[in-house]
Amino acid sequence: MKIISKIFLILFLITTLSNAQNSGIGNTGGKWIAGDFHQHSYYTDGKHILDEVIDNGFKYGLDFQANSEHGGSRIQDGYNHFWDDPAYYPVNPIRGDFKESNGHQAMWRWQSLLEYVYPQIQTLRNEYQDKLILTGVEWNVPSHEHCDIMIEDLNNYPYVAIFEYYFDEDDDDTSNSFIGSWLPEKNLNDTHEKAVAAARWLQNNFAGYSWMIPTHPERKNLWHIEDFRGLNNAAPDVAFGFDGMPGHQKESSRGGFDPESAVGGGTYGGAGYFIAKVGGLWDALLGEGRHWWTFVNSDFHNTEGDFWPGEYAKTYTYIQDLNGNGDYEISDVVKALQSGNSFAVHGDLINALEFTVKSDSNYGTMGDDFSVDSSGDVEITVAYKSPANNNNGDKQVVHHIDLIAGNITGKVQPGSPEYTKDTNETSRVIKRFNESDFTRTADGWNRVTFSMNIDRDTYFRLRGTNLAPNTPSETDAEGNPLLDFEQKVLDGEEEAWHDLWFYSNPIFVYVR
Image (tube, rainbow, N blue to C red; front, side, top):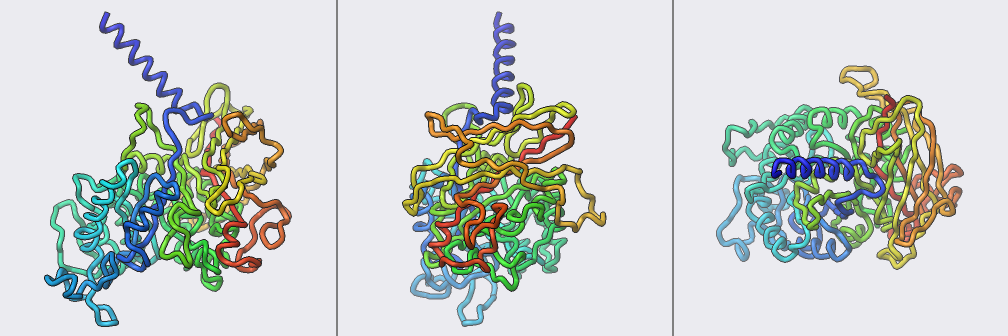
């Protein structure tokens, strides 16, 4: 009898888990959470103490935050005191002899992460026990620019300090402060190969407990499609996306992009050129069927040029909670972001999204590889929620959502002539859902369903906005965002609140 009961229990659990995975509308057994994983304090070039940054992020609705500040070396602590000031550090904690040009002695970031930032984060965790605070670093990537790194502090140790010591382009310390057979040799040759080695090291040692997400990748034209392909090939469980929408959205040059050096000449509706251009670099990666997602972060430094974490930019990800108790850990956040079931949004235009493809009784949602019968019909459903007002006090109204599709042709191999190609000519807007197309449900969802026939492998993604096509200085006749720098009419913060977008991650549909 006990054996039969156990068999029925196993069958019940298998069925429940299967339904939870396949039931796109809605995602069952979990919830949407919002996060920010790129922000700065006095420890590097921010203008606020870490406590204040974290406090504001949670005040503005975030569920998790990662303190990710520059690697290399810095001359001040988290309270804007110089490391070599005997009034605050009578016993000099400095290791090494690196000097800044203004005469103050700097501390290597690996040490400040290990001995100062991490203990402060542990204290903050006790204060915010219902939230998650993660340890990270903004990696100076050898031969490229910047990248957000997060490594879970397993066994209560900030392994991100070890990563910074070995792999940061600006860290020339050779003190050999870390010992272990699993650690690499310190390599001061700052090449792309070193960046790939760093990705491989994370994949080998911290897959499922870390991420590597290039940030504001268009800013200095130092990231190219072959670089993203290389990182993703080396570390598919760690290097799984980039910041498609940069921080610094308050700045007069939106996103902090210099039009002379940024790819595409700047941002488009606050988004980088890589995701804003239909048929551009991101679509080229998705056309391979590559799991490469888009995210957004605040890159908060100060309130003059930046919004507080969560005030304007949020990455929403759907986190599984199959046991129903509402609890989740850092590794669950990593898993959720890695899954691709997430979207990036400005100004709280939406705060929940159900984007699914259905064939017969099976569902696929954002991040999924989904199979359908040959030349079969699929049902695409888009549903979203918006808060009544955003943090500027504006009523939130989505004017339209575009359904973008492109062919999937398979992974491009290194060495192939296509490996450096960063366009996808098959990508196009195939359907526009206007506000009037959606049916509003009693629980606040706005929902629309669209059926179409698929006869080839195809991916789908969404973008939505509060602006109509042909909005002067903002969108063209097709509804595409215009270059912010050239079309600038409003300044800084006013422009940011006026021009809102969200971008979903894709669903990959394969024809059997």
